Length: 367
Length: 182
Image (cartoon, rainbow over all chains, first blue to last red; front, side, top):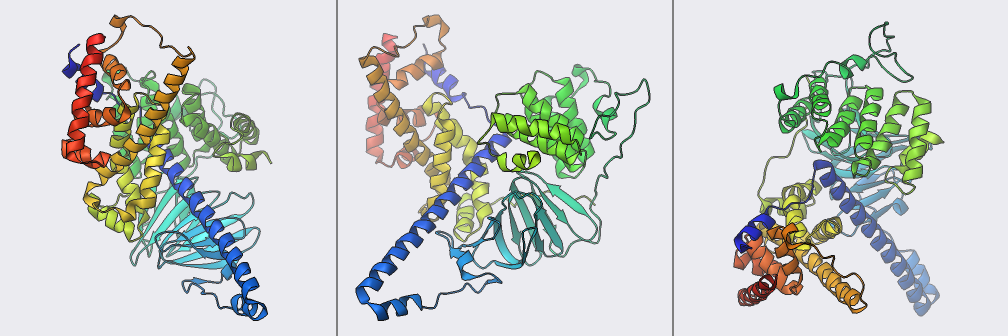
């Protein structure tokens, strides 16, 4: 055996890796870090509490009055919140805002958030300045809205952050979905997606793909629409071009990414469908199916999204994507109004992943 | 006009570390995206398989998130990250070696015999490397397989240049013996 050849061969070995895996790992690191911070705060509170009790016993009655009557510092940047809900975190000068519904907002130093409304059905915050990371607890029937500049950011069981500067707003979604709306347009962001917008909004309207109203197919055409379907079957069933005439999978995926970034969602969907139908055996097809599901959801085509997510886990039942795809399928059927399919998919997810990442959102479907 | 998804402007590693220290969370995300695949590749080749790769990466970047504000050489973020990963890998390699010894002691888990012609040169090299103690294996792989210079390997391992040279020399001698046996 030539050692140089062996070294060369070994240096070319690489683990399987994709963008979704990369994003999931970062999400997991962030989630673990938050839990550790929360645990350290709890320990500090407990130790602090124990120290106070010991000191009180040591100094007697007038010591008790002094310690418990001491003025606590209220962070000037948070308004409308009682002291008990706010605590300093362990790092970076951050503060943590704990809301009544279990949601948490972590404020970077200098950030400003007002709580305007907190009821069982509505939480409304207004972010005035800086960067805030929101971890919103899923709660059926409760609306969670953050007003930022000219926008409303509306969420459901989601982890996302908003950074506000004097002129721009940046939104970064880690899990779930957020809907960003100004006076005349709406944008939906999914996991791993980011957007950068002018703080004051724009006079030019956002491009929104209007949902297609349900249309009955005529005989000889595509299969009749099922519950929750919209009239987008034709795009899914158009003829497949010859593989030799097609760009490579890598080129198609790049094309889809560029189209998606530019807001040309229909083009992105077309490129992804071409990958899925024309390169069936390529190992990237499950990732392409998953991406197609997200694109279709952004287009408002929830039934098509559900079908794409279903194809993802069917093609790669043991992959890292399978759990996410099953959850997204259930949520998409729900959004499409296909209640029976949504409940079936949600029930299967909960059986397969009783401790799954998405169990809170999926359980809301079957309740 | 469609909304555009944008990325932050490119910045040096040192600039990103400075921004992170100032409280900008996205700076860590960008450093992560920049280096995670490289770190994953190094860890994968050191471990020899994928089984513990995610755990190593999770621990590595969690440690990075918790201690990056104390990093003394922000321009060497990649070497620092690899160093964290290498220490995590070495713990696992040591544990594997202990369990392998215990299994062999009790006659369990004997390696499955395979025809020599079925092994690629990389497989043969990997088996020989597994017989080295982790403190000799990792610097040898970092230098010869990953192509890192000796000063960088010393920085990653957290030892002197002279120590690294000794360990790599010792690894070379032992590997030659193992490969000759094979």
